[in-house]
Length: 439
Image (cartoon, rainbow, N blue to C red):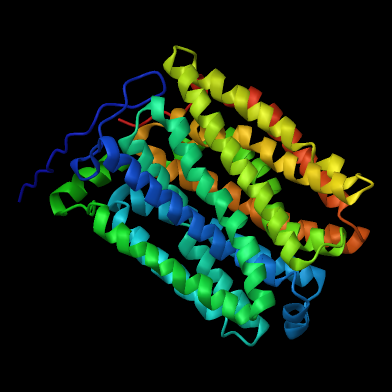
Protein backbone atom coordinates (compact mmCIF):
# COMPACT_ATOMS: atom_id res chain seq x y z
CA UNK A 1 0.00 0.00 0.00
CA UNK A 2 1.37 3.39 -0.99
CA UNK A 3 1.71 6.21 1.54
CA UNK A 4 2.23 9.88 0.91
CA UNK A 5 3.80 12.34 3.35
CA UNK A 6 1.88 15.55 3.81
CA UNK A 7 3.94 18.57 2.80
CA UNK A 8 4.31 21.32 5.34
CA UNK A 9 4.99 24.86 4.18
CA UNK A 10 7.78 26.43 6.15
CA UNK A 11 8.63 30.07 6.68
CA UNK A 12 11.56 31.63 4.85
CA UNK A 13 15.02 31.45 6.30
CA UNK A 14 15.82 33.94 9.02
CA UNK A 15 19.46 34.86 9.27
CA UNK A 16 21.21 38.01 10.46
CA UNK A 17 20.92 40.56 7.69
CA UNK A 18 17.84 38.92 6.12
CA UNK A 19 14.16 39.56 6.85
CA UNK A 20 12.96 37.65 9.89
CA UNK A 21 10.92 34.52 9.36
CA UNK A 22 7.25 34.65 10.16
CA UNK A 23 6.24 32.57 13.16
CA UNK A 24 3.32 30.14 13.05
CA UNK A 25 -0.10 31.64 13.52
CA UNK A 26 -0.28 30.61 17.17
CA UNK A 27 2.52 33.01 17.98
CA UNK A 28 1.85 35.84 15.55
CA UNK A 29 2.86 39.42 16.31
CA UNK A 30 1.04 41.70 18.73
CA UNK A 31 0.78 45.45 18.50
CA UNK A 32 0.72 48.48 20.77
CA UNK A 33 -0.11 48.37 24.46
CA UNK A 34 -0.87 44.64 24.49
CA UNK A 35 2.69 43.82 23.42
CA UNK A 36 4.22 45.89 26.21
CA UNK A 37 1.73 44.58 28.78
CA UNK A 38 2.80 41.00 28.13
CA UNK A 39 6.44 42.07 28.26
CA UNK A 40 5.71 43.63 31.67
CA UNK A 41 4.26 40.34 32.86
CA UNK A 42 7.32 38.47 31.61
CA UNK A 43 9.50 40.95 33.51
CA UNK A 44 7.48 40.40 36.70
CA UNK A 45 7.68 36.64 36.21
CA UNK A 46 11.46 36.83 35.94
CA UNK A 47 11.56 39.08 39.01
CA UNK A 48 9.56 36.57 41.06
CA UNK A 49 11.80 33.74 39.88
CA UNK A 50 14.85 35.64 41.14
CA UNK A 51 13.19 36.45 44.46
CA UNK A 52 12.51 32.75 44.97
CA UNK A 53 15.96 31.60 43.84
CA UNK A 54 17.85 34.15 45.99
CA UNK A 55 15.72 33.85 49.12
CA UNK A 56 18.08 31.09 50.24
CA UNK A 57 21.04 33.50 50.16
CA UNK A 58 19.50 35.63 52.91
CA UNK A 59 18.81 32.52 54.96
CA UNK A 60 22.43 31.40 54.51
CA UNK A 61 23.58 34.67 56.12
CA UNK A 62 21.34 34.00 59.16
CA UNK A 63 23.19 32.36 62.06
CA UNK A 64 20.05 30.55 63.25
CA UNK A 65 19.55 28.92 59.86
CA UNK A 66 23.24 27.94 59.71
CA UNK A 67 23.05 26.42 63.20
CA UNK A 68 19.76 24.64 62.44
CA UNK A 69 21.39 22.61 59.68
CA UNK A 70 25.02 22.70 60.88
CA UNK A 71 26.31 24.28 57.67
CA UNK A 72 29.95 24.90 56.74
CA UNK A 73 31.08 27.39 54.06
CA UNK A 74 31.36 24.51 51.60
CA UNK A 75 27.83 23.37 52.50
CA UNK A 76 26.52 26.88 51.87
CA UNK A 77 28.20 26.96 48.49
CA UNK A 78 26.80 23.54 47.53
CA UNK A 79 23.28 24.51 48.56
CA UNK A 80 23.40 27.60 46.37
CA UNK A 81 24.92 25.57 43.54
CA UNK A 82 22.21 22.88 43.66
CA UNK A 83 19.67 25.25 42.15
CA UNK A 84 21.95 26.02 39.23
CA UNK A 85 22.76 22.40 38.41
CA UNK A 86 19.05 21.59 38.09
CA UNK A 87 18.42 24.88 36.30
CA UNK A 88 21.15 24.15 33.78
CA UNK A 89 20.14 20.54 33.20
CA UNK A 90 16.61 21.58 32.22
CA UNK A 91 17.46 24.51 29.93
CA UNK A 92 17.61 22.53 26.70
CA UNK A 93 14.41 20.57 27.38
CA UNK A 94 12.58 23.80 28.26
CA UNK A 95 13.87 25.54 25.12
CA UNK A 96 12.65 22.59 23.05
CA UNK A 97 9.24 22.71 24.74
CA UNK A 98 8.56 26.41 24.10
CA UNK A 99 9.76 26.16 20.49
CA UNK A 100 7.17 23.48 19.82
CA UNK A 101 4.34 23.95 22.31
CA UNK A 102 4.18 27.68 22.93
CA UNK A 103 4.83 29.83 25.97
CA UNK A 104 1.65 30.29 28.00
CA UNK A 105 0.78 26.86 29.40
CA UNK A 106 4.27 25.37 29.90
CA UNK A 107 5.22 28.58 31.73
CA UNK A 108 2.05 28.43 33.85
CA UNK A 109 2.67 24.87 35.07
CA UNK A 110 6.35 25.48 35.87
CA UNK A 111 5.63 28.79 37.61
CA UNK A 112 3.10 27.22 39.98
CA UNK A 113 5.44 24.33 40.75
CA UNK A 114 8.46 26.44 41.72
CA UNK A 115 6.38 28.79 43.90
CA UNK A 116 4.96 25.83 45.82
CA UNK A 117 8.44 24.31 46.22
CA UNK A 118 9.74 27.63 47.59
CA UNK A 119 6.89 27.76 50.11
CA UNK A 120 7.53 24.13 51.09
CA UNK A 121 11.17 24.97 51.90
CA UNK A 122 9.86 26.66 55.05
CA UNK A 123 8.63 23.28 56.32
CA UNK A 124 11.91 21.41 55.71
CA UNK A 125 13.69 20.02 58.78
CA UNK A 126 16.57 18.07 57.21
CA UNK A 127 19.46 19.13 54.99
CA UNK A 128 18.44 16.59 52.34
CA UNK A 129 15.04 18.28 52.14
CA UNK A 130 16.69 21.62 51.39
CA UNK A 131 18.57 20.07 48.49
CA UNK A 132 15.39 18.49 47.09
CA UNK A 133 13.44 21.76 47.20
CA UNK A 134 16.27 23.62 45.48
CA UNK A 135 16.36 20.98 42.76
CA UNK A 136 12.64 21.45 42.11
CA UNK A 137 12.88 25.25 42.07
CA UNK A 138 15.86 25.15 39.70
CA UNK A 139 14.29 22.65 37.29
CA UNK A 140 11.00 24.57 37.04
CA UNK A 141 12.55 28.03 36.76
CA UNK A 142 14.49 26.82 33.72
CA UNK A 143 11.42 27.66 31.60
CA UNK A 144 11.59 31.40 32.28
CA UNK A 145 14.35 32.69 30.01
CA UNK A 146 13.75 30.47 26.94
CA UNK A 147 10.01 31.23 27.10
CA UNK A 148 10.56 34.98 27.56
CA UNK A 149 12.98 35.36 24.67
CA UNK A 150 10.89 33.10 22.49
CA UNK A 151 7.98 35.50 23.02
CA UNK A 152 10.09 38.63 22.42
CA UNK A 153 11.64 37.17 19.27
CA UNK A 154 8.19 36.38 17.87
CA UNK A 155 6.60 39.75 18.64
CA UNK A 156 9.23 42.51 18.54
CA UNK A 157 11.42 44.02 15.84
CA UNK A 158 15.14 44.88 16.08
CA UNK A 159 14.33 48.52 16.94
CA UNK A 160 12.63 47.33 20.16
CA UNK A 161 14.83 44.40 21.17
CA UNK A 162 17.35 46.33 23.27
CA UNK A 163 14.67 48.04 25.33
CA UNK A 164 12.68 44.80 25.58
CA UNK A 165 15.76 42.91 26.79
CA UNK A 166 16.51 45.74 29.22
CA UNK A 167 12.98 45.71 30.66
CA UNK A 168 13.01 41.94 30.94
CA UNK A 169 16.46 41.84 32.53
CA UNK A 170 15.33 44.48 35.04
CA UNK A 171 13.12 41.78 36.50
CA UNK A 172 16.18 39.62 37.09
CA UNK A 173 17.89 42.51 38.88
CA UNK A 174 14.98 43.94 40.84
CA UNK A 175 14.24 40.39 42.03
CA UNK A 176 17.29 40.22 44.30
CA UNK A 177 17.19 44.01 44.82
CA UNK A 178 13.72 43.78 46.35
CA UNK A 179 13.91 40.21 47.57
CA UNK A 180 17.13 40.53 49.61
CA UNK A 181 15.99 43.32 51.98
CA UNK A 182 12.47 41.89 52.29
CA UNK A 183 13.78 38.38 52.97
CA UNK A 184 16.24 39.75 55.55
CA UNK A 185 13.46 41.76 57.21
CA UNK A 186 11.16 38.71 57.35
CA UNK A 187 13.89 36.53 58.84
CA UNK A 188 14.75 39.11 61.52
CA UNK A 189 11.10 39.95 62.26
CA UNK A 190 9.66 36.44 62.11
CA UNK A 191 11.78 33.48 60.98
CA UNK A 192 13.41 31.91 57.96
CA UNK A 193 10.49 29.48 57.77
CA UNK A 194 7.97 32.33 57.46
CA UNK A 195 10.14 34.01 54.83
CA UNK A 196 10.10 30.97 52.52
CA UNK A 197 6.38 30.42 53.00
CA UNK A 198 5.50 34.05 52.24
CA UNK A 199 7.74 34.50 49.20
CA UNK A 200 6.51 31.26 47.66
CA UNK A 201 2.78 31.73 48.15
CA UNK A 202 2.64 35.44 47.31
CA UNK A 203 4.30 34.75 43.96
CA UNK A 204 1.29 32.69 42.89
CA UNK A 205 -0.73 35.90 42.56
CA UNK A 206 1.14 36.57 39.29
CA UNK A 207 -0.78 33.76 37.65
CA UNK A 208 -4.03 35.76 37.77
CA UNK A 209 -3.08 38.46 35.20
CA UNK A 210 -0.97 35.97 33.24
CA UNK A 211 -3.87 33.60 32.70
CA UNK A 212 -6.29 36.44 32.04
CA UNK A 213 -4.25 38.63 29.67
CA UNK A 214 -1.92 36.36 27.71
CA UNK A 215 -3.53 34.60 24.77
CA UNK A 216 -3.40 30.85 24.44
CA UNK A 217 -0.56 29.90 22.10
CA UNK A 218 -0.80 26.15 22.65
CA UNK A 219 -1.05 24.87 19.05
CA UNK A 220 -3.99 22.79 17.85
CA UNK A 221 -3.04 19.53 16.07
CA UNK A 222 -2.63 21.17 12.66
CA UNK A 223 -0.65 24.10 14.04
CA UNK A 224 1.49 21.65 16.02
CA UNK A 225 2.66 20.01 12.79
CA UNK A 226 3.68 23.40 11.40
CA UNK A 227 5.24 24.47 14.72
CA UNK A 228 7.38 21.32 14.95
CA UNK A 229 8.56 21.68 11.36
CA UNK A 230 9.26 25.37 11.92
CA UNK A 231 11.36 24.72 15.03
CA UNK A 232 13.13 21.79 13.35
CA UNK A 233 14.60 24.12 10.73
CA UNK A 234 17.53 24.63 13.09
CA UNK A 235 19.11 21.48 14.46
CA UNK A 236 21.10 21.22 17.67
CA UNK A 237 24.11 20.16 15.62
CA UNK A 238 23.99 23.18 13.32
CA UNK A 239 23.76 25.50 16.32
CA UNK A 240 26.76 23.92 18.02
CA UNK A 241 28.84 24.43 14.86
CA UNK A 242 28.40 28.19 15.11
CA UNK A 243 31.17 30.23 16.79
CA UNK A 244 28.46 32.72 17.78
CA UNK A 245 26.78 30.11 19.97
CA UNK A 246 30.07 29.31 21.70
CA UNK A 247 30.86 33.00 22.06
CA UNK A 248 27.42 33.61 23.52
CA UNK A 249 27.94 30.79 26.00
CA UNK A 250 31.26 32.27 27.11
CA UNK A 251 29.67 35.70 27.54
CA UNK A 252 26.77 34.27 29.50
CA UNK A 253 29.17 32.41 31.78
CA UNK A 254 31.40 35.43 32.41
CA UNK A 255 28.49 37.79 33.01
CA UNK A 256 26.62 35.26 35.14
CA UNK A 257 29.64 34.43 37.30
CA UNK A 258 29.70 37.98 38.69
CA UNK A 259 25.95 38.48 39.06
CA UNK A 260 25.39 35.09 40.68
CA UNK A 261 28.26 35.71 43.07
CA UNK A 262 26.46 38.88 44.12
CA UNK A 263 23.19 37.00 44.52
CA UNK A 264 24.61 34.10 46.51
CA UNK A 265 27.53 35.55 48.49
CA UNK A 266 27.05 39.31 48.69
CA UNK A 267 24.86 39.22 51.86
CA UNK A 268 27.38 36.98 53.63
CA UNK A 269 30.31 39.17 52.47
CA UNK A 270 28.71 42.35 53.80
CA UNK A 271 27.84 40.72 57.13
CA UNK A 272 30.98 38.67 57.76
CA UNK A 273 33.78 40.80 56.29
CA UNK A 274 32.36 44.34 56.38
CA UNK A 275 30.43 44.05 59.64
CA UNK A 276 26.97 45.10 58.45
CA UNK A 277 23.80 43.78 60.03
CA UNK A 278 21.66 41.38 58.02
CA UNK A 279 19.10 44.18 57.46
CA UNK A 280 21.74 46.63 56.23
CA UNK A 281 23.25 44.02 53.94
CA UNK A 282 19.84 43.66 52.29
CA UNK A 283 19.67 47.43 51.78
CA UNK A 284 23.02 47.59 49.98
CA UNK A 285 22.13 44.55 47.92
CA UNK A 286 19.06 46.52 46.83
CA UNK A 287 21.19 49.49 45.73
CA UNK A 288 23.50 47.24 43.71
CA UNK A 289 20.78 45.40 41.83
CA UNK A 290 18.55 48.44 41.41
CA UNK A 291 21.55 50.21 39.87
CA UNK A 292 22.24 47.48 37.33
CA UNK A 293 18.53 47.25 36.45
CA UNK A 294 18.23 50.98 35.74
CA UNK A 295 21.46 51.18 33.74
CA UNK A 296 20.56 48.02 31.80
CA UNK A 297 17.23 49.46 30.69
CA UNK A 298 18.74 52.84 29.75
CA UNK A 299 21.64 51.23 27.86
CA UNK A 300 19.25 49.02 25.91
CA UNK A 301 17.08 51.99 25.00
CA UNK A 302 20.07 54.14 23.93
CA UNK A 303 21.40 51.29 21.77
CA UNK A 304 17.97 50.92 20.14
CA UNK A 305 17.92 54.62 19.30
CA UNK A 306 21.40 54.43 17.75
CA UNK A 307 20.34 51.41 15.69
CA UNK A 308 17.11 53.12 14.59
CA UNK A 309 19.24 56.07 13.44
CA UNK A 310 21.15 53.77 11.09
CA UNK A 311 24.08 52.50 13.17
CA UNK A 312 25.13 48.87 12.81
CA UNK A 313 23.18 46.81 15.36
CA UNK A 314 25.97 44.33 16.09
CA UNK A 315 28.70 46.96 16.55
CA UNK A 316 26.51 49.12 18.79
CA UNK A 317 25.55 46.27 21.06
CA UNK A 318 29.11 44.91 21.22
CA UNK A 319 30.43 48.33 22.30
CA UNK A 320 28.00 48.42 25.22
CA UNK A 321 28.85 44.85 26.22
CA UNK A 322 32.60 45.52 26.34
CA UNK A 323 32.05 48.73 28.31
CA UNK A 324 29.93 46.84 30.83
CA UNK A 325 32.50 44.10 31.38
CA UNK A 326 35.26 46.68 31.88
CA UNK A 327 33.12 48.71 34.28
CA UNK A 328 32.23 45.64 36.31
CA UNK A 329 35.93 44.94 36.91
CA UNK A 330 35.99 47.81 39.42
CA UNK A 331 34.63 45.30 41.95
CA UNK A 332 38.27 44.56 42.79
CA UNK A 333 38.70 48.13 44.04
CA UNK A 334 36.02 47.39 46.62
CA UNK A 335 37.82 44.26 47.77
CA UNK A 336 40.96 46.32 48.49
CA UNK A 337 39.16 49.37 49.95
CA UNK A 338 40.46 50.30 53.39
CA UNK A 339 37.18 51.79 54.63
CA UNK A 340 33.62 50.52 54.80
CA UNK A 341 32.34 53.47 52.75
CA UNK A 342 34.87 52.79 50.01
CA UNK A 343 34.02 49.11 49.91
CA UNK A 344 30.30 49.80 49.69
CA UNK A 345 30.78 52.44 46.98
CA UNK A 346 32.73 50.15 44.66
CA UNK A 347 30.52 47.21 45.50
CA UNK A 348 27.46 49.10 44.29
CA UNK A 349 29.14 50.90 41.38
CA UNK A 350 30.76 47.82 39.84
CA UNK A 351 27.51 45.92 39.53
CA UNK A 352 25.74 49.06 38.32
CA UNK A 353 28.30 49.56 35.53
CA UNK A 354 27.86 45.94 34.47
CA UNK A 355 24.37 47.07 33.45
CA UNK A 356 25.90 48.63 30.32
CA UNK A 357 26.37 45.06 29.10
CA UNK A 358 23.17 43.47 30.38
CA UNK A 359 20.43 44.27 27.84
CA UNK A 360 22.73 44.52 24.86
CA UNK A 361 24.41 41.20 25.59
CA UNK A 362 20.99 39.56 25.87
CA UNK A 363 19.72 41.17 22.66
CA UNK A 364 22.92 40.39 20.77
CA UNK A 365 23.33 36.77 21.86
CA UNK A 366 19.71 35.65 22.05
CA UNK A 367 17.98 37.71 19.35
CA UNK A 368 20.10 39.75 16.92
CA UNK A 369 22.52 36.98 15.91
CA UNK A 370 20.07 34.06 16.18
CA UNK A 371 17.60 32.82 13.49
CA UNK A 372 14.05 33.27 14.75
CA UNK A 373 13.06 29.56 14.44
CA UNK A 374 15.82 28.63 16.89
CA UNK A 375 15.47 31.33 19.56
CA UNK A 376 14.06 28.94 22.17
CA UNK A 377 16.66 26.22 21.60
CA UNK A 378 19.56 28.66 21.22
CA UNK A 379 18.52 30.46 24.40
CA UNK A 380 18.31 27.14 26.20
CA UNK A 381 21.84 26.25 25.09
CA UNK A 382 23.15 29.61 26.28
CA UNK A 383 21.32 29.27 29.58
CA UNK A 384 23.23 26.06 30.25
CA UNK A 385 26.35 28.22 30.39
CA UNK A 386 24.54 30.74 32.60
CA UNK A 387 23.49 27.97 34.95
CA UNK A 388 27.00 26.57 34.98
CA UNK A 389 28.22 30.04 35.97
CA UNK A 390 25.81 30.06 38.90
CA UNK A 391 26.87 26.65 40.11
CA UNK A 392 30.59 27.31 39.67
CA UNK A 393 30.37 30.79 41.19
CA UNK A 394 28.47 29.64 44.27
CA UNK A 395 30.58 26.53 44.97
CA UNK A 396 33.99 27.83 43.86
CA UNK A 397 33.58 31.05 45.86
CA UNK A 398 32.71 29.00 48.93
CA UNK A 399 35.80 26.83 48.44
CA UNK A 400 38.05 29.85 47.85
CA UNK A 401 36.63 31.51 50.95
CA UNK A 402 37.31 28.40 52.98
CA UNK A 403 40.89 28.16 51.67
CA UNK A 404 41.88 31.83 51.82
CA UNK A 405 39.83 32.99 54.79
CA UNK A 406 38.60 36.12 52.97
CA UNK A 407 36.67 37.44 49.99
CA UNK A 408 39.54 39.06 48.04
CA UNK A 409 40.49 35.91 46.11
CA UNK A 410 36.88 35.18 45.04
CA UNK A 411 36.64 38.77 43.70
CA UNK A 412 39.90 38.42 41.77
CA UNK A 413 38.42 35.42 39.97
CA UNK A 414 35.39 37.58 39.07
CA UNK A 415 37.63 40.14 37.35
CA UNK A 416 39.43 37.40 35.41
CA UNK A 417 36.13 36.22 33.92
CA UNK A 418 35.02 39.77 33.10
CA UNK A 419 38.20 40.37 31.10
CA UNK A 420 37.66 37.09 29.24
CA UNK A 421 34.10 38.18 28.45
CA UNK A 422 35.21 41.51 26.99
CA UNK A 423 37.79 39.86 24.72
CA UNK A 424 35.35 37.14 23.69
CA UNK A 425 32.76 39.75 22.66
CA UNK A 426 35.21 41.35 20.27
CA UNK A 427 36.49 38.10 18.74
CA UNK A 428 33.60 35.62 18.43
CA UNK A 429 30.33 37.54 18.20
CA UNK A 430 30.28 38.24 14.45
CA UNK A 431 27.30 38.02 12.04
CA UNK A 432 29.23 35.88 9.55
CA UNK A 433 29.48 33.17 12.21
CA UNK A 434 25.79 33.15 13.11
CA UNK A 435 23.93 29.81 12.99
CA UNK A 436 22.44 28.74 9.67
CA UNK A 437 19.08 27.08 9.38
CA UNK A 438 18.51 23.74 7.62
CA UNK A 439 16.37 23.38 4.54
